[in-house]
Amino acid sequence: MKTAVLANSSRAGMKLLASLSGVPDNELFLVLFPRGRFYSLQKGICNVFSAFFSPFAFLFLKLVLRRNFIFLRHALDHPASLKILRGHQFDVGLHKANVIYRESSIACFRTGILNSHIGLLPKYRGRCVMEWSLLNNDPTGISVYFIDSGIDTGERMIFTREVDLFGYKNLIDAKQSLFNLDGETYREALSRLRAGDYAYQKNDGAGKRYYVMSNLFLSVAEQALPDNRSGIS
Amino acid sequence: MSALKGRLADLCRVQAPRLAPEQFKEQAGFVKQLQARLTSQNNMETLLSSEIQTSVGWLEMDGDCLDNLRAVALNPPLEYRSDEDNFLPAGELALNELHADPHSCFQILTQRYRLPHSILQSTEGEIVEWMLYQLMVVCRSNVKALVEKNSSIDHILLLLNLVGVKAQFSGDLRLLDALNYYYELTVLGDLRDKVPGWLFASFLGIYAQALAMTLNGFLKT
Image 1 (cartoon, rainbow over the protein chains, first blue to last red):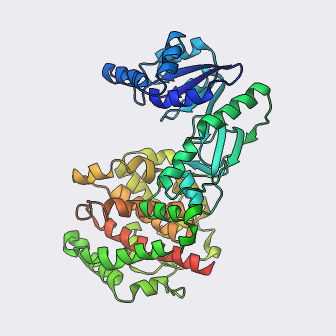
Image 2 (cartoon, rainbow over the protein chains, first blue to last red; image 1 turned 90 degrees about the horizontal axis):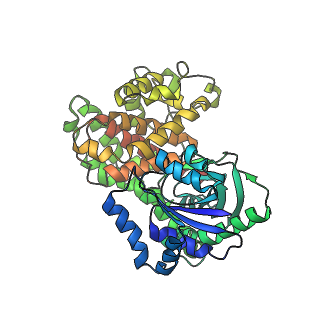
Image 3 (cartoon, chains in turn red, brown; image 1 turned 180 degrees about the horizontal axis):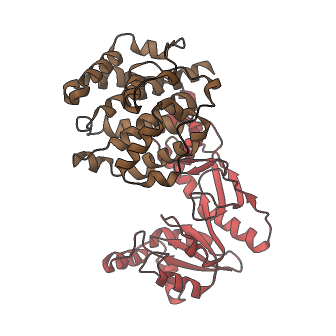
């Protein structure tokens, strides 16, 4: 399978890519593209070269030499970017960027673009879903699904998994622990896709869309972390 | 629960006394009345009492949307009976009509919600979701800039007032949290003395009621 990690930051992209190396029958690419409409020359160069000063420098060098590193000067849905993506005929994309994808970009990937969402779909869509799950006293976890152009509305889910947040006293660490699972969850999703060992679960859109949480509710959600529960009033 | 009680206490005992009614020009009387209510010794207890009685049904309210929002802000939550659920706000509203400029949006919403409690109707769910999206995605990032440029944010404050009415009765914590968020952004942020218009004061009154209603809901369960 030709798999592209889609990232706005070379370091973040390389971190994910490093955790995926060794997946059988899988050729990995890093596609770096701007969050906005285009990279200024200076920003682009800085972003690319920061990978050489990261723990993943050697892997990045190998990627560049194999021509498996793709730098897009324009946004992912720009005609020039779309042409490059189509030319590579990727099987699947892995979301590691801070953007919402348009259908034209998604269509460049044979099976689609996967997202490792840090909430349990279909109930929890949108932002701060880990915090909202805690506030509502619901299980926390991860859903891996194929993105569409909506906010966590992609219908095809590969799997969902509850993840307990024991050992964390604050929301930032707890959330980061869920984000850090993306390598593991994408690995599993890629293995399942390759083996055909899955049946799509349907994300039926029955859930609500959640938004940024106020400081007041963040403080309540933090108290609802398993390690802090004794202090709940 | 203690967090919500703490917020309600902050609103009634710390922030409400800082309102300066004279700054609200022709609505100074309303703001003065609201301030007196919010800061009165037993207001929190009244709000938190589960025995709130009201003599005014929401369908009998006179006046336009803005008059009625002032009335709602001043009075404990109006009773909402489910047998009134067949009342529909005037006509159908396509969401794309609301994508017009803020002034038109304000006009459309004040016409539709002449009776603010009609936002509680089940038919209004999609519009409430739209309001929440506007508040938490579209307006959130530019409200500070608008206030600092002395531009009107009446359309945002209207959304907050209407979402506040809905938050009192719906139990959907996302709605209450939109009010929490804007309270933190304006009152607890550095915009407290800069937000223009009485709709800001009525937002505080309705927010206090929404906090109290949510607390009452927790107490009952």
